[in-house]
Amino acid sequence: MAAGAQLALFRLGLISPLGQSLSVWLSGALLIGAGLYQFSALKEACLSKCRQPISFFMQYWRNTRWNAVALGLRLGAVCLGCCWALMLLGFVGGVMNIAFMGLATLVMIFEKLPEIGRYVTKPLGWGLTILGLALMTNGALNLL
Image 1: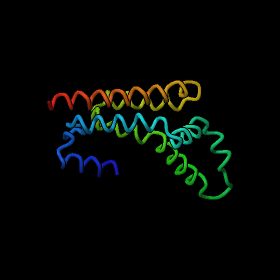
Image 2: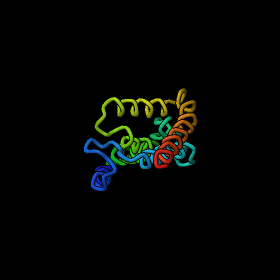
Image 3: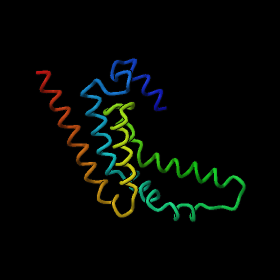
Image 4: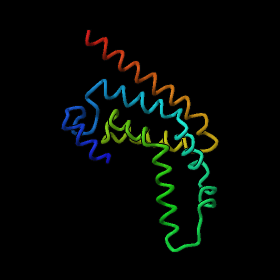
């Protein structure tokens, strides 16, 4: 799905061949969307499971042949629920930009740590939202 989105955005001229946004409006919308998602109940529900994987495994463990596969898929879906909006920010910084993607990875790791994560999620949401609004405001001013 992400590769399909990247191809569609490239064909529309919204991102470069390296996957970086060429549109202030796209970048702003992605930043605002990711920022607002930080405050959602779905994000919080997924983070609560990611921050305590042992509890997750104990809750869903069944002594069946394919349980490990089922648990892996289920936890993968939960982790995707935590980070899909932050992953979309790859289009802002460039999906082929190793430094940006490394920074994004560190943010996602810190957010999932129980002792640190609770202090990261909401401020990150505010920061992303404000950055997106500032970017879009600047883009609107440049059109005048």
